[in-house]
Amino acid sequence: MQFDPLISIRLDLADREYQSGDILECEYQIDAVESDEMHAVEAAVLWYTSGKGDEDQGIHYYQRETRKSRHLDQPDLRVLTHFTTTLPNSPFSYEGTNLKIQWCVRVRILIQRDGQNLREYIHDQGFQLHRLPLLQS
Amino acid sequence: MSRQLIRILGKKRGSRHSVSSKFGVIGNVAFSLTLLLLGLISGVFFLLNLPDGVASWLLGIVILSFIGFGIQGLVTGLLGSRVGDGLRFSLIQNAHRFDLTQKSKAARRLPNVPTIDTLLMSPGNTQPWRLPVTTGKPIEIISVIAFFATWTMVSFFLVGYSINQYRTTNHSGWSWWLPTLSLLPSIGFAGWSGRMLARELKNQINIDPLKVEVSHQPLYPGQTIDVAISQGGALYVRSLRLFLVCEEVTSYHQGTDVRTETLEILREQVFVQRRFEITSKAPLAETFTVTIPPDAMHSFQSNFNCLQWRIESVGRYRDYAEIRRGFSLVVHPLFEDADDVNNSSGDAHAV
Image (cartoon, rainbow over all chains, first blue to last red; front, side, top):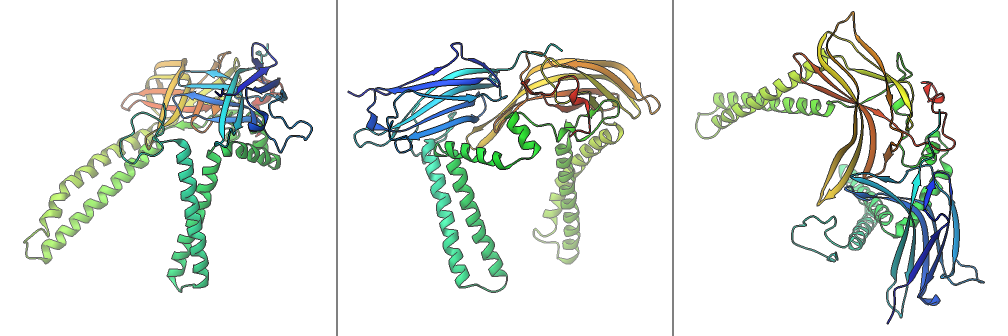
């Protein structure tokens, strides 16, 4: 019996609330899959809309690693990987009626098992991007 | 809910996509690739056996359009797919690297927030910025003009044709009385649209546009600005009200239609004046303050969704229909290196 792979994402702030210009630190790791089954790993920091309208998406940070692109001393794509990015000034997280803007770290992996076709697994870890506190003046 | 791979027949009800999106992308790319190959192959044959005259131009245009649409479909198809996620990101990053214009810099500083340069081209008289009117009735008036012109031409043509047929034929068959019969409805349409046009033009000519000027642009949440309004002409105003409006505008596909829905999430009355007269010697000129709510969301713009701010005026005048106009505002988010909220945005010439 084969289990789906486990994707763990950890952000540096436990409450997952960031302000524009903050540095987001993230770690992710993949388990329950063999190393040689891993084809590629993509990590992205992005926002997407939900609600009544069609989905819009904006990618702020993106990295893709394959076995070929990895250094020879660490070809395993499952290991704990760390990245940082400075969060942009907009758009902020928003909970409207017909429109919602949500930020997340998305890890997408491509796996090939026993000669089957490539399968993708996606895991999101949402966070909030807020504005700076109002100026006193 | 799982989707079918292909559906030949059957009406789509409710779901956003009728078949698998992957199949859609593959179909789009295959079609575009076929079109491109067809264009390229026929282009080679065209160049080898170049025809003379108009045919060569016509064939050349057709072949070029095949190649153009093929390339366009291929690029948009690939960018729209999951394969395109990384490609699109890379393209945007590289495009930004070479585009050093101020607009691009502003867009990079505040992604998905509308820039204000096009809105701020007009300095005001009493305040630094005059807001552009974003909702009037230009399309309605143009449509009425087109409708009126079409039916007037049709009526004239039918009159001329009927008279000509009546004079030249032996008054039998369908030759003259059928166009004469069609004349009545066409004159009716022309008269009806003419009345509508006259009413619209009367409103446009007799009522001077309301001018709205603001002390600062862009605006920030929690900021208070001065707003000046002015209107000339000779009018008796039953009421003039101004509102600060924030709305979510969402577009979505429903079958092959694209629908847009607007939902107001804030409507706050910021000015009201009732029963007064505007004359050429005493035009309307008022100044008041407007505060953007401190917890307000900034303006947001993306392909299918946007959040927009505006000032809306609702005027009721004696002898005229109610007139509504919208004036765009741009609310920027506060961030660390933003301009000073109270000082830096009042210069109308620093565009």
